Length: 418
Image (cartoon, rainbow, N blue to C red):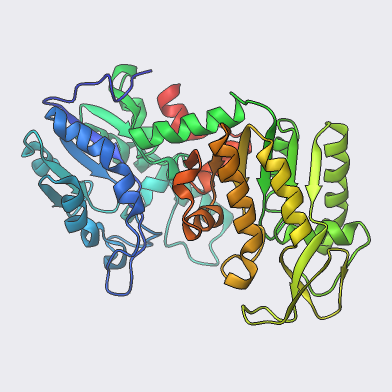
């Protein structure tokens, strides 16, 4: 497989798919430029080689073309500042031939939001709510047919293709997967960010050093069931925490007050316990919890057994004994995957459980473990605690990472790897 380090971009036009889907405030100002900065090593390498950049990205979920609310023009000045090179702007990603032709070595062109066209995602738009199945099928077919022309136009701008957008790697969209078909194996590759993400996932899922511990948080068992079941065939230890704690507690006969609970998933929780046992996986669940009399940072709180939560109280974080138990398991691990917080970490009074987990991961990492932190809330945790640079890797991918650890093949990765 071609790699970006081996490739010389001198005199070549490179279409680079990035993920510049950054948050903007009401005045169209960037509030977090992490994704832009993350793509810079790839973009700067191409510029330094004397290549010409065609940068493609999406932003948000626009339903019309154009939609000023989601225009990439809002980030143009910042992209140019970060890149340190001239960056022109193409108002229409499908009509940029003249601007592409005008590019000189060391220059870049940022295309307008690719999702302004329904063909990028391959999903029809504007269907009436009462559209029949036949109308829906016809609309979908029409978009799919025009998607090929859309993709071909994007590919025509460049001599080579670089995918550096792991956050969209789980989508078989025109610019993330289909476009790769127009380039041979020597002229398509991962960018630096994408390569780091793929390597991190492979280290955890395929090149595992044991003991391997997966830590899964989140409010619902149902949203994590595919990940949990895949993990049961791979890990030595599985720590389940967060809101799903109380579904497991109730399933085992515990009293959970008014804690979050999926009452229709009690049997599922019990089956997970049995599957873990059958697979020889050590399953760790909270034994105590920090509970509150209302969902507020200023609520009254106490620590109680996770199976004896008083009426009117709800679980908000793992308790001190659970923190110690989880930390011991984590510190003895050599491969660690963390997805989902221990509690309502957004409230400072209920963030100590997540902090304890994060600090244990940091200690294990310092002692030689490989740690991968992914999923929006987990990333927010390590950033909040100032620990992001003390774990092995913090993933930029949300849904893409989740699907990867579920064991699914990601279209954006397959398109390059074959």
